[in-house]
Each structure stands twice: as structure tokens, then as C-alpha cells.
Length: 131
Image 1 (cartoon, one colour):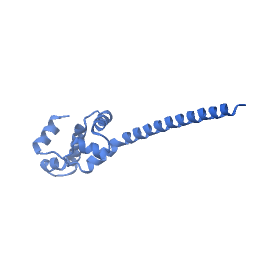
Image 2 (cartoon, rainbow, N blue to C red):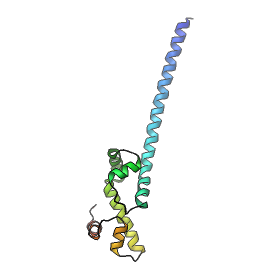
Image 3 (cartoon, helix red, strand yellow):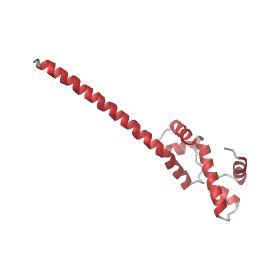
Image 4 (spheres, rainbow, N blue to C red):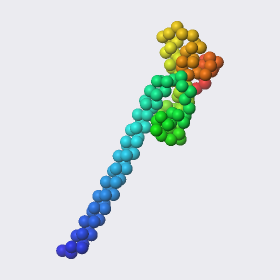
């Protein structure tokens, strides 16, 4: 048996194993990233609800989620069927409804607590359904 042929065959097998291993590693990395993205809407919702009155913008939300703005916008739209800003507005409306039902606070105070810039903005959004 030719030793060079055996060595050559062994090298081919090692290279094939390396390629298969690399492909599996890339696939696992993609799965890990996908799982992180699937979790991110819950993480985003938690962040926004924790400080719903903050004047959030898309760049701040994307930065917190540790992804680029474009990816964040696409991901949010795919997971919620809303733009990220409309998702935030929806959360603010839901929080407003909770507060209206559970407190005797004025609508003005509730609107500011929930991140609306004015009672007019709150009224327009809440009653005219700007979503």
C-alpha cells in the first residue's frame, strides 16, 4: 500500500470533517441568533413598560436590543405587525386603559404617566385610534 496515498486520503477526510464541522457551527450560530430575536419582543416589551413615559425613539430601542436599527425595525414589524413606534403607542394605550380602570387619577396625569406628550396627543391617539 502506498503511504502517500493513505496520507492524501486522510487529509481529504480531515478537510471534509472540518468543512462539515464549520457548517454545523454556522448553522448553530444562526439558530442561536434566531432564538435571541424571538425572545427580544418580550425583552423589548419589558423595557418599554418599565419606563413607558420615556420619549423612546427607534434608535434607542434598537440599541437596547443590541441590534441595528434596520434589523430592529424589520424584526418588530414581523413579530408585532406594527412599526416599533406604533407598538410603543399600543403599549401606552393598554397601560392607559389599565390605569383608567384601576385608579381615580385624572386623564391628564394618566396621559403623562403613559408617555403621551400632551392630553391632546393622548386624546387623539386614544379616541381616534391612530394605529
